[in-house]
Image 1 (tube, helix red, strand yellow):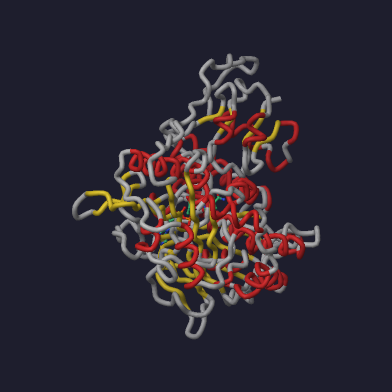
Image 2 (tube, protein in one colour):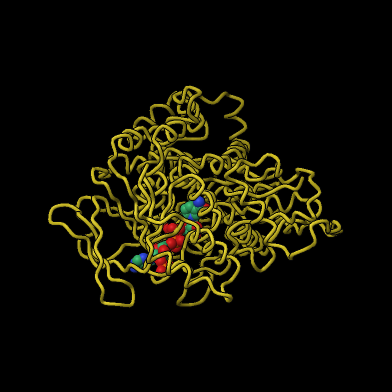
Length: 561
Ligand code: NAP
């Protein structure tokens, strides 16, 4: 029974390296990898060994016999990636093992280990640390602004996608490494500077993501009842900066502008039966608001046509399996218009699912999602709060209005400039060459400075895409270290520790995070994965319950420093 990759595929490629017969593609060195919406198992070549199941950090792989009803479309989706064959045709196992990228070999140098500071603790930061710590003689210090690590896995992944959050088990192993020090609740740029980090390390890797939403510059945005989808994501995920966000659910319609995967996540959470969400780690304040919600319809409004939908096929399959999703008759016409002989296979798959969606005139039996196309937003209406959105039908002067009490924009993200580093304002990223920060004026690398993840390549891809992205950065960093380009640190870890604790007495370390984690899990009472703390003081109080390090640990930490 062949194995199948399903919706929560994170594309980190771990399964590719585990597969003994090279039947999972695209591999990280194949051209389609960077743009693939997921990875696919060749059913004719799979030998059913299950090695990929254990390697997958998010539990996305299962044998066909174990799939749920909702996962069955993924059988065909995996197979469709490969050339058509007779049903009985088996592909002989390839003798070549899946390509494993060279580990960066750190050449030991006088003066102690390679010391790297990583700023951020999301997927790109964790994969960079993991890659660095495959080597002996490397020490990593990780800085995070919040008292909790793991970035978008904690605050971005939707609560009903718990399997995607399983990647934190891998991250827990990384943060448990003795060669990694975690400084949580410390903001680089406020409590410590780039120069401070360089004085104590050979190099600094910024893996700070793209924290700013792209803003839609139309009248009415900013009225009560408007927000960005990302803010709402942070709100329902219990991010302490957004716990008090006013999310108005007192009208029967909400509109989301933009139709990427973030829009799908938010629409799904707004329309899912709250009792189902109650079994997840959704923030309690959001659950209470959703229980009282009057929203009956969430319209996801795209400015272009169905063939240009920004959401990915696995997410569309997941959405239609769990929610009522409808199209208006005019949008069904657009789908039919876009389905031509020239349509590429991936787009065809999406369009065929859209073509089968019920018509919006069908009776409403539970909160539903409507996908709407060719709507260019013109202004948010309302005097004192959002009352709707005025659109023009894209490419025409024809106006169209949707009443709504909540208007969210979901039109992508931008990186934020980092003090002391150049910034490409148009692209919203730090200019770099394969992760080496580059000064655009001179075209030369900026000494000791590197980037990984969304601040390096822009806001695209999935959690696992950051694995190969971070690996590339680490390879360049190690190459620079080996050739002696990186200046050795002028002070040791003890001085760094003193500096951080002087400037930020509330610093939270790995033991503090484990205490927060344990307290949140205990609050879940076995019924929910965790009940998150949603305020920094509550997190700090839980962290303070961590046992003090034993003398042995303190001595070991001193030796490692
Ligand atoms: P996205 O995929 O880039 O989608 C942005 C949407 O905004 C597009 O529909 C775009 O339309 C629209 N847009 C941009 N400017 C606009 C404007 N001025 N007016 C109206 N519409 C505008 O962004 P995202 O949804 O934020 O996702 C970011 C990344 O995270 C993606 O790679 C996504 O796959 C990933 N992600 C993945 C998951 C998952 O796998 N479950 C979940 C969340 C996010 P045009 O195409 O017309 O420009």
